[in-house]
View 1 (cartoon, helix red, strand yellow):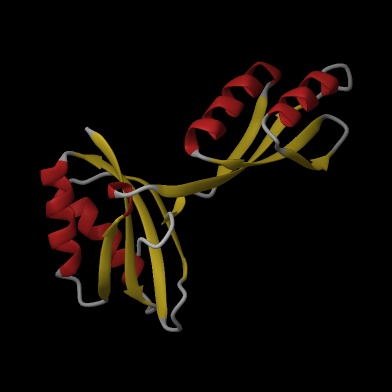
View 2: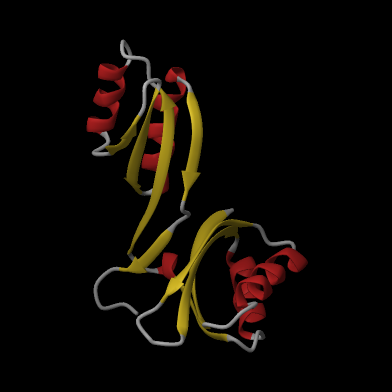
Length: 161
């Protein structure tokens, strides 16, 4: 099973996200990550969906997406070199004695502390999914209180559109 990152350009209309995600659910396809935001064209939104499956599964997903009236274009981003990023906010237990070690992890991952309280730190990290997963693993021994992740967003490199 390969991971596929798909960009779906859709009309910016109410209910489109529900129709796209419902299509995945009805067909038994899993969405590992989904992000939605404005695109470069007014009136259109870009969805970036990460899913797993073989080439046949990807072909079926693409065909089914094109059947939805609000879908303008489906792009398999993972078919070409791409840049993908995710943002995570991680609230970690941080007593004063543990803070220097935690800050060492933060520096190593080029992350930043965005909030400090008497017993915790909130860390912001941006990178690919593997980087964020690795940072979470290193922070677990200190006690993670909460995590919020944006999901993957991606674009193809260079002139590929």
